[in-house]
Image 1 (tube, one colour):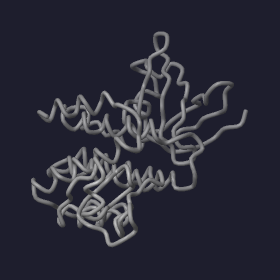
Image 2 (cartoon, rainbow, N blue to C red):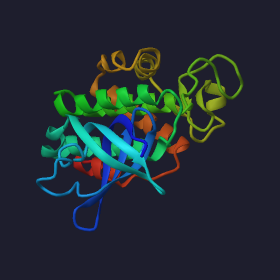
Image 3 (cartoon, rainbow, N blue to C red):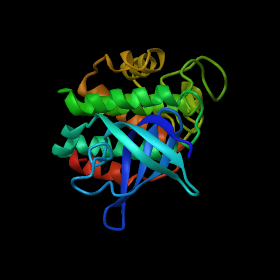
Image 4 (cartoon, helix red, strand yellow):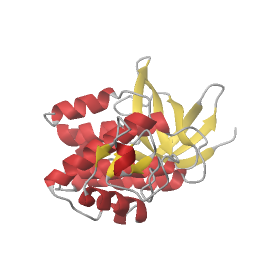
Length: 249
């Protein structure tokens, strides 16, 4: 039996039978995979801590016919505090769902980098005292980069001329004022919001979180990021609807 060792985060758990689980793991080496964990749900089972929701663990797996099977795991970080606060839990659940939907098994070599970004995001969700909507926006923008969907912010995507202060997700980035009038989805974007997007795209995954914006700019940034995701990712996330409900939107 070939054993495979990898690290990853439990982003979803599905109960099967009494004490068995099907885990969805976001792993360093294999992207998002399904894993059968027999007996992991038992209260006294040694796998319980490492297979809890949002647990970051080292897993020892072996290939099965339909999915990987778990041999053992060792907890690295539990992120337990996320499960004790409804708002932080809602943010984490949405980011986990978004990742699970967009990242595929055997993704390219950047998977390890995206996992690092994912973990940084979860650390901030669990411990940061600032506005977690900004953390969410940074993760979403960086995910677009990972997926090869980063919007162009350097020239008009419609005519190729100088970019203006309008963002058109359908066109793939900024457009000038003349072209914006011909595009239904083009929305004005302020200089401060555009600067924030440039900052995220031009800094590494840790420094990308190291900026702050006013509440007005954050609300604007949220709207533009949501429009980009809606254009590029054709899926409605129940967890996002729930998060917006928790935030009173």
